[in-house]
Length: 82
Image (cartoon, rainbow, N blue to C red; front, side):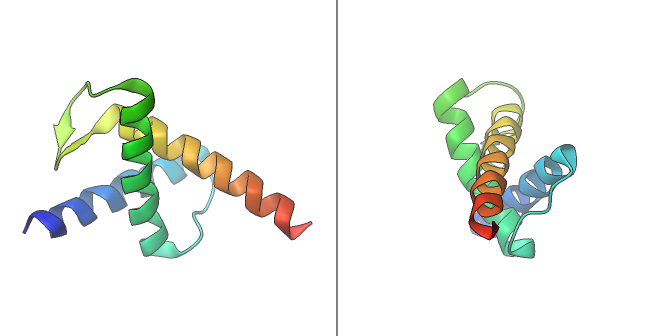
């Protein structure tokens, strides 16, 4: 059950970070899940572990880390398309 909860929370974090930035995440649901999980890891490295926790993710650093990841990915993919 813990893996399912991690996937759900990671997907929601990735989806919400994409909404905040107004950018689509490549890969749909799988992309949202990966952006949420990797973004949570990145956010905890950069900002530490603070704020409310849900499903093993600290929400605020996870959202910020996911937003940073989405910005980096959209920049790289935008350059690759040109």
